[in-house]
Length: 303
Image 1 (spheres, one colour):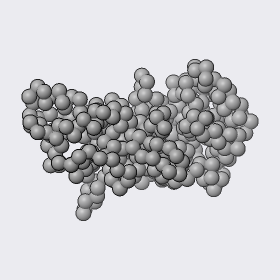
Image 2 (cartoon, helix red, strand yellow; image 1 turned 135 degrees about the vertical axis):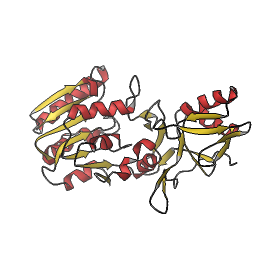
Image 3 (cartoon, helix red, strand yellow; image 1 turned 60 degrees about the vertical axis):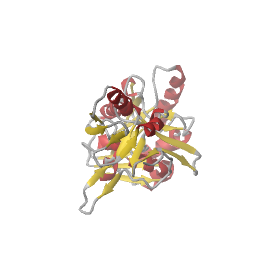
Image 4 (tube, helix red, strand yellow; image 1 turned 90 degrees about the vertical axis):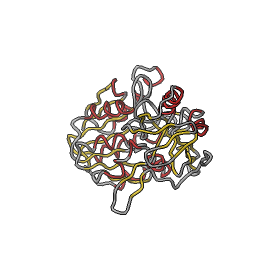
């Protein structure tokens, strides 16, 4: 059996077989491995656990030396220690070796890590989670954003793709979703995330790589019924909170359209001043009404 190692690229989450069948790879975190160890200690020879970060369950075989997975791969018990030592990371199992989903972007000097939760994982950007994970999981965080903007129909722009959860959820009811991602390295994280696979398989989702600041001026007037704007903090991406950027959002939104803008906990003292600035600038560029939506940690602006 191989020794756990780290690799940067070239481990696709899905392999396409000769007839186009999609074969999911095994992705694990400490949430799966801890109960596996407990089952081994109790002498169990078969155990059901998730091999795709809590999306489904599969049966594995346990013996004195290690674990046999449904695809025939094996890992020794000692190899799982790598996962237990990195509770804020997920691992892909391929060719009987573990690869941590953890990338450095030379262009932006950032580190991205696929971070597990008890349900859908989040992505860490320089150790900061890109979804709410305290008292809520990323799936529910996403649904609240979509509900704030409902009904989500027609054409939708998602300005910051990340793991693609908002684009995927929006595409359930929208006719077309265009999602933008600044850093192509983020795509490598998403490809290894079982919860992100519709980004690559749903024909209603179009992915575009590049800065939203650069891409928006290329888009036609009144092109979208709804816009989802879920940027990093203003400290990390201040340009995505600017009047110039909001003016472009206003230009490409159809009459009667809606914009959801994630800001953060509206009750937090540190966020309140940011919210005031966001609301003022949105109104200055022509949005008729801006409504606070505390449960979604953002505001909805109406055109």
